[in-house]
Image (cartoon, rainbow, N blue to C red; front, side):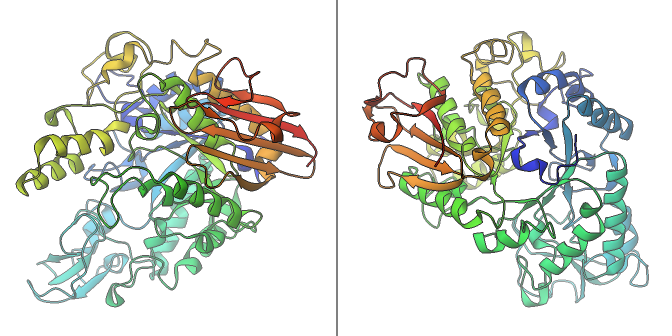
Length: 542
């Protein structure tokens, strides 16, 4: 695995939601041994790293983002020995394992918090954020992200503790050097076990100042991150990703500074909230403003060029399936899934593939009782009580619900799609007989092989990694096209984002270029673009 300092620049990361990937023991829940069983498949795809959604020990009040022991694996997924075996097996395919770390808060079941709530004199008390008060008289009116007050009363010590998320997720006090030391020791412990990187959950919230009502981008944020990086990540050859909902390109340049003082890259979400009504939440649907999508991608591409690094993604465990969201998951499923892949992977940054995306897995339309996500059940209850039409509420859930991403991975056309021999924790998508890995791996025209080719192109052609970015046809309502250039290579990516056949306005520009990849077979005719057609043109020189 060479020690190329920036190996992650031409890497592609694959995100696994372990609960839904592969069950090895028949309990209906995916696990680490299941991932080991599927490593050959991931090796074939050609990815460089796996980002695992949280697998540390947790009461699972928030899908594992409430960690009760950073140095143990949740029994749902296996043991520390299974984790070591996974790191070793992945290494045989030159694949690194990226762990999802939550450093803003712990579970209230964590040993530190159990000690902290015993008394104000306990050495762990100051690991968390406490304020004096009396019951019913809150320190201030701050609200938690998941609703309700951000303060929780502990009668034994007559104090409130601060939590930005659930009451079961008390915030850590990063002002305390002992907290930071414990965290660094833990990270180095995982590094010694061979972990290849970390994704840092809501990392832009660690420098909170509750008295000043600051939760995000606090004054000491970058000071804390730089110390964290110096004490841990910089001691190894790691890929590190900061999740930052509050990042703009200026802040992202700090997070992903090429000098390596903070993280390898930033994960930001600006393009992800576009298809909702202005000022409303994600359930209030609106058509995608296509020109705005182009502007946002262009801004991030241009502003981070040579001074930061992007993460590129359409999907994750919280988002609906992109082929159903902005593609066409019916008659043009294969074409539109490939188009969306080509559009994203041609840009500068590290692409993330979410499990099943490479197969064109789609959203589901379940009855309310078949969903498992607490967010879905809450919004259903709230909206029905508020008098919304039931069909309208279900339509929003079908379009935007998080369980769209969490249905079991579709491996083959046998029962439960080859995910489990037991009863799956959540229903398998009904279309698994048509959409599955087994039918695609050896089919050269499959979505899987389109992704495989995109991963190879990034390694073969430096322009994918270092080329500058120019948006073409910026006001075209149908085409997303752009040019990437370095000193000796040029690529032009042309994507028809919609389902009509249209004129191809770039025929002249591309006529002497070769085609590296296209999602239709016959590409001789350069005068039109067919529905969802996508092409990557290439030439030597600028």
